Length: 537
Ligand code: GAP
Image (tube, rainbow, N blue to C red; front, side, top):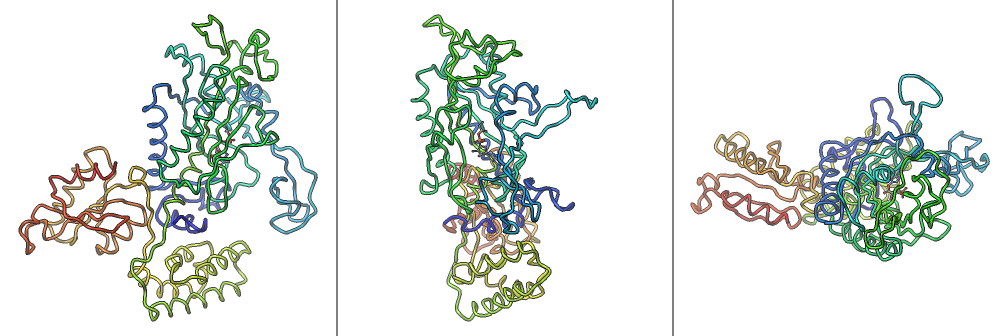
């Protein structure tokens, strides 16, 4: 099971500290999000998995980390100044601004069809460079990391003596002044990309393109996405970017629909060619604008043919934030631990009905907040037995706390959820923000606490996993909390560990509880680290 609605993810992310809206205490800044304590771990784990697979484990790849700020000529010759534009319309009624291709002729906010003619809008953020506000002293925040790779092509080639085919990988921030940022972290104005520019001999490009598409699909499957939710889409000729001969998008079934997660483009010799001097001597296949500023020919000397060639480029380009959203969505599940009896569901059903009535009558809520609350409430009441755990998320949606009967609903639902349901993130263990939670059965028992804290320290110092100690509730509650943040293993220290139980053979052993199966086994403390490493893969 994956998330059914974006609200489930937004609400869990905020409640548990994965992702927060940016600048919230000043009313927010649209299109920006901040990663919280668990979100930063998840994002770093995803990036590390990508770097490992694409840089460390390959023999044909180098990594770099280029500046976000680049000479503004980069963006002239990359084509972004001229072509990185979206057609934009303004609503004459409510003055909202929209992307013309996304709204089917009607303002999504007020419904008016009175729109301005579409005008091009450049998506790059312009910024002043240096202290003097001279009109020429500006640059842009990069809208893709790719150009940092092309401009460093010669540096990397000369410093590593690489032979074709080889690639350069980079991860980092990119910025786009999106007209309509939306769908949580799916379309934002500041985001991260994981990009590879893979340089090949002209003529070998199509075979490499196909190979990279397969490679990238396999990588996304390896981090937990399911085959059913990942769909390759071959762009049509009229959809291709100005630099591409062919592009395959990997679409993912996000809660808001099937949309692009990664693009894998055949960029031909466009980029190296357009950033080169003396282009006429290079025999370029791509059409590029004349370059009167570059000081280099970005070519490769082919020792076999004794000729300088401009390599073709295959570019797998993925969004980190979209990756986090996909992984989070795929991992999300609300599960019934055991069936809740009808007499326990009935009062919740009634309280939910009262809550939704109160929402629909409320005049202070914004239309967006009201519609979102009602839609989610109706989705839940449609199959209350299965979806009851979603009420916790419903109650943390914008505006919910202002409804007077919200407290009553929470009072009814919390004990039933605690007893019969759980929300769980089934992350692949290597992506989980926290790998192991060490839990003392009794937080005031010195013997138990000493052993538990010692286990946490030792596991943590192994350096291969993030381990936490948690004594903030009863064991059952702690298990549910760790399930909800996707911790694959809980280690419980109890009286048997101390040798105070009935069975003397359990001395110096702990209970390991598995997130997915909820099964528990007894493991010797001396074998715990090896056991966990093996299970983590
Ligand atoms: N260098 C090629 C390039 O940037 P793109 O299709 O424009 O191609 C690549 O972007 C990936 O970057 C997308 O597949 C998406 O995952 C991510 N991305 C692009 N714009 C984004 C945005 N506004 N918010 C979040 N991710 C974005």
